[in-house]
Length: 209
Length: 389
Image (cartoon, rainbow over all chains, first blue to last red; front, side, top):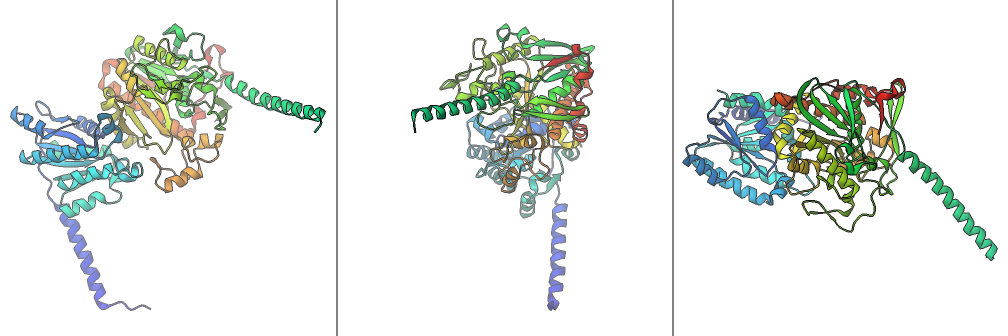
């Protein structure tokens, strides 16, 4: 019989304690302030923003003049204009995951999208906006579900997720733990929902106060 | 060899060729002339022809039937197209279920089981496809033509060297001049396939159709699968349908934008050229995958294939594939439930344009009972209520 080193038990206990403490700290990470109105865009021209719009529609939020808006090609300049005309948005949701069809139709590349979104995030920071990185397309919007060699989804995630204040993901798209790792590494709170429909109560908690 | 022997040899080959031609010809003839009965649902109030909207299609094989189901209350109008690509049988079978079972309380449902009837009369040239398939029913079975993606060359030939889509002037694959889903919005003086699309565009405009749902199936190696492709006019509706179905029907369906720069497709051109919202539904059909094995009726109806399964294990598919495959009941059930949700959510958002229908089976019901359960026995019906596709 193989002998177990007396210190290994202590080490194992330490590991269990450390991992429990770590999970606890992630769960306890305070959610950022999420206020209306909300601007929704994508990083990769996927239909994700329209799908989020469907969720917001279901929330039936009361806010004048508009609780939320979807702008496909939202730019840093747009944020300045919103502020200048007195309609500053408080929360920015960027849907991660790319659509080659969407980008192809618009005649742009993922690099163009990353440039646009990076500038947008910088500007949003200056306006004190809360940034939510959302991944709601499941494995279809991950490299595993894309054409072999197409890594645009992952580039989109790299550009948005680590710089977000909150991650909102659908479980299937996090099957490999990619978002959990980012959340833990960067200390970003994460909401993980089983299905898109389950985001309705989550968003209700965030925005229907 | 003597001259006499040579003559005998030549004659033997001629006779052998004639016998083979006779067998093949009989098979082609029977397939082209197979009569597919549609037993009218009591909800069908009239059956029109495509030529009622464009006389230029009259007398052609594509003068298709349009089954109209009207409610007692006024509302909106939804057109459902089956058989744009007849080699995707879940599309036609779904329209059969609608035409034979549905009842409309408000608004109108227009159902076309053979959008490209010519394409139902041929199979992939050189593809060794089965000419037909049979759906088992409680009363025996009903035989359907297998069909192809393109119109029959007997009806439209020759193909041009280059196909320039009208009116966008975009160059498409030459063979797609016979592809109904590459010739929208059609052309009055064009080819048969273009005229067919033109006739349907006229139908959409004259009947003031609110939504067109074009039913399809796709190979698992194609990224646009298990999804609703939506024209921008219908993206909110498609997003809502996708979300509601994925949360409650037992299957997932995504949504994709209709690319603005890709022409000839129903989800682009109908939305661009008519008042209607255009949506295209895709269900998974392993029969269409390039890496499939034997291309037979079993694969068509059961959707099981060891080679496609292996492709999945290598991460080459855009939809899951396991030993259960993708049986026709599942594929038809998906279309049925998606149509139900489109109708319900559209009606909820647009009460004055509502289309309220009953007796359309849901996904779970089709999966459990099978497609054949919803097909009606034409021999037991008044012949007045039986039409043929």
